[in-house]
Length: 281
Image 1 (cartoon, rainbow, N blue to C red):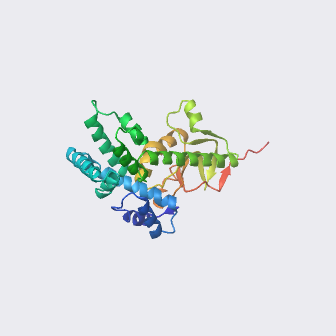
Image 2: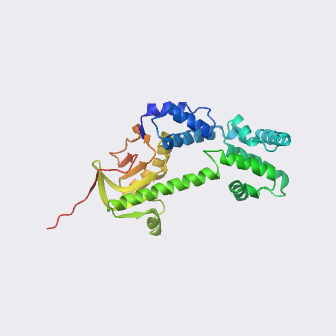
Image 3: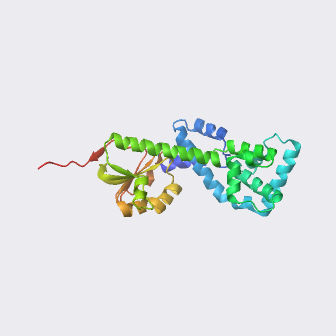
């Protein structure tokens, strides 16, 4: 799904101050029925992450943390089974999983002799049954399963979706009888920063020579695409030549502006691949 900048901005504007819930996503789908669920979810997640980055600091002052912790304690004293943390996160417009982390860290600081390590906290968030307080464990669990933008559950889903699309791309390359090296093979040869696939024999797509293909199981918005250009794509171009990026959930049309410089954008696997033919003398 390729959107113009204006179309993207219209969707993004609808996400202002919207909590990261599945109910919000359903409303977004009703508002934009022509867009795919996957595309809207990717945009929804990326826009919310931008919002969280802008407001992150105010939720991590000592005053804010203590206020949240006391509100949590008061809430569970009244009703430990109620979704106290989840409702608090939605009220202050903060991701539920991140609110759960704040409260868990504060709880462990109070009840443990040594400050909790990041690895211990991450382990407890992945498996709340490890939390030495049944009420808090349940509260954290509610936050994790109801957060569609942050948290260990979302991380696992994103990793699985990314791997799924890399496998899909590999199968399509094999179907086209294209010879390639994957990321693992390239790293085994000593490359530290590589695209997903290097074509051993370059191909042409829409008149442009392609040496590599990168799979992105997300929507290509301005922020993420410019970060990828800086951190990945131009490095690939310097090492391997021009290449193709597939944003499986679409991208902003105006971002496909580096074709003459050697980076093409697509929203699906190209159907007009031209392979090099060797004539026999």
